[in-house]
Structures are given as C-alpha cells and as structure tokens.
Image (cartoon, rainbow, N blue to C red; front, side, top):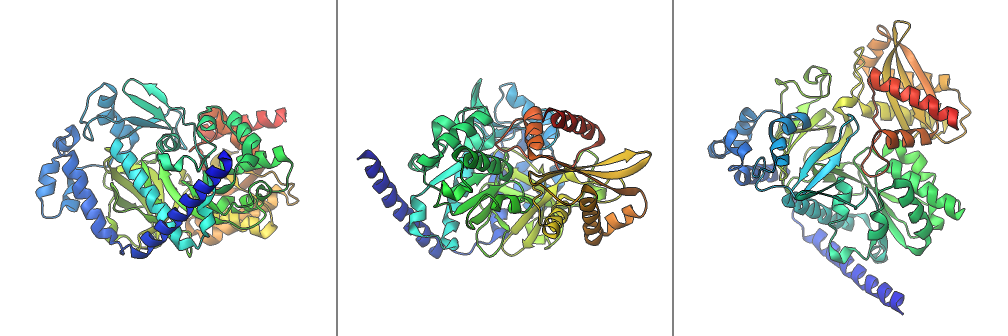
Length: 521
C-alpha cells in the first residue's frame, strides 16, 4: 500500500514537473550572454569590494571606471590554484574571514584534479551552492527541448558521484564537489535520487558499487548522471551481478545520461555497448569551482555557458607561447571577454566566481561552436598539452584520432594516456590504451593509424614527425589498470579523471604500475 502511494505521489509530481518545465521553457526570453556577463562581473565586484582581495585590487575604483571589464583585466593578475592558495586562501585556513569573498566558506571541495599529487581545497560558499542549484534548475528546464514523455519525470535518477559522507573540519565540511552537491539536493528531489543517502555515504567505491548492484532491480532508473568512465564501470558491475546482457534489462525505462566534466565522445562506443537501445546524452560541465555550462538543446553536443549565474568568464587564446611548462599562463598572455571570442579557436578558460576565485585558471581549454548562443565544447587541459618536441597536440586532437581508429577497426578504446618518451636518444609518443575487447588488430597497426590521423589533423604534429619525433608506440592494457591507477594515486569514482598526458617522471611511475598489474593478473 505504501509503495503504491509513493508511486502515485511520484507520478503526480512527475506530471507537475513536466508541466512546469514545458511552461518555463516556452515563456523564457532569449538571453543576451554578453550583457549577462557585464552584470555578473559588476555584482561580483560589488559584493567583494570590502574583502581583503577587493581592497587590495581596488574593486571600488574598478566599479567607478568607464569600462569595468577592461579595468578588471588591467588591475587583477591571473591566478592558478597554487598562486591563489599561497597568496590568499591560506588565510581562510587560519580562521580569517572576508578574504576573497565575504564571510568564510561552509564547504571545501577536495580535488586532486587530473594532475598533481596533493589535493586542492577549493572554497565552496553558500552563494556558490545557490549558483549550482540554479544551474541545475536551468538544466532541468532545458529538458523541455528534448521531447521526453511525461512519465520520464516519474522515474528515478542515478547520480554516481563521490561519497556524500563529508568530513567535518573545524567550522566547515570537506568532500568532492559531486558529494557536496548531492548532500544539498532539495527535499522534494530526494524521492527520485538514487542510490539514496545511505549508499551514497559509503566511502569505498567498490563497496558502494556492490550495494548499487545488489539494489539495482528495486529502482526504476530513468536517467544517469556522472563521469563516463566510472558510470561504465558501475553498469558493467550491475550487468555482471544480475547476469544480463545490457543495462536496459535491469532499467528498461533508462532514457537519459548526463555526462560531466570530460568529453563524452571517447567513451561513446564502449558506453553504447552496454545499452539495448539508444539514450539521450546531455553534456554538463560541473567543476570543483562551479557549474559552468550545460547542453540546452538536442541538435548539438555543445554546452551553453551559464552566463547569468555568479560566474564571470574570460578566455586566453590557447597557444604554446602563452603556456608555461607547468600548465600555468605567462604574465603577458592576452585575454578576451565573451564579446570578442571567435568560433573554432581553442581558449584557456578563466573564471571569477561567488566562491572568491578571481581570474582563475581552471585548467580546461574550450572552443566555441556557436558564439551567439555562447555554446562551447571542452577540448582539453592546459597540462594535457603535449608539446615536448613541437607537436602541439591538444586532447581534442587525440580524442578525435582515437575515435577514427575505433571506427576504422570497429573496436572500443575508451581510455588512454600519452607521454613523450626518450628511447635510445630518440623521442617517441608512447600511448597506453585501455580496452576490454579481444582486439584482432596489432598494436603496431593501431600506432600507424593514430600517427596517420594526427598527421592529417595537425600540421605541427606532421612537422614534428619529420624531425624530432621518431615515432609512435602503442601498448594495449585492460581497463582495470586505469581504474586501479586512479585508486592508487587518488581515489576511485566521483570527479576523478584520468590524466591524458604524463611527463616522463609520471610516465615512469605509470609504466612500473602497469607492469606490476599485468604480472598480478
């Protein structure tokens, strides 16, 4: 009786949500992203002008200038995490308030990112939580564009993030951003949220997935949300536990997957192999520093920057001469705001936010697919820029090459990492590529196909191959090696992403790890 009541209640709420979304979507006026951004910057400067950071950089004077955007660029330098933490955020850890944002943060997002051995502790203020919630509402509202039936909004949503078991530290809580977000979901959404609060609090990834697999048949999942690599692993475990062929045998009403933080394309082939029927893939861009963008319409895979919600964006042209060896920006790197970007060019993304990040290098590179709509796609990471011998390879070029190889040989290659390695005084690009398929083509054939694809797509790479870059080597390894590497170096699940480019020191560690893993299998 109680289950029937709960089902009817969800059906009623689902119909209401569908109606509200349709109405909201139909009456929403067209945004002007450029004007939105001017207002956001003004609001940020006004609210932070009396903080230590705001006083030091003269926010009040910037607000009084004829062009606050230009004055902001002139007065405030670029910051990456290390610079922001060493010059400003360390004061928050000493108990001081009003440093880069009014008050003190209620949360810190712990992020090891995709590089670096030490965790970052990024402030998450109450204003940022409001911003993330508003972005979530915007994403849900956009579902009116995707022609989904009313009963979809009665189904449950599997949000596969990091543990919601946040750690109490003095006057704040710490955890990954997906765990912080999930622990702050609205009360009305909790009936839809799976795996539910009890399972979501389990810290150990493998144990959490085990509980998900055991309970999977009790849930009517309509949508999945999370990082592609970990979502694939979870679905494989559910399929294996129930001894079925695909995930739709367990969740027949699964219709939507919202990806996040990384390009979905490299995982598309292996992800679809776990399905019985196609589903709608919606890209989102939730970083530890904020909810930056989401896909707003079905006829594109690009995401729209959220330009009216507490985040101000700037863009540095992604060129080798503007990037230091550690992935940071040179002091003289030029910057443009949203009004001056161009389609098809790669930019390093800078953000200023309601969490007190200022002209902050988030580490991602993006390209605009539609300037008028402020639509972008993530193209890589500044630290994943492989340029040891002038090859100037960005992650999007590598992803495209891997996809071409998948199509050419009809194989699944969802994960990889690359390094420029000196072998007998000659540089090679050494690729470790993950796949759980029995692949009939040789590693040499894959290496040749990758090499040819990159030559055709990148003139700098082609020049490098004729000079300092001797060749390409490929090592095929099981996907489990990538998962275990993440577990050994950071942790499994959540927002953890595999580093696509390694320096020689990191590569040596990875190669030794791979060898040990293969010996133990």
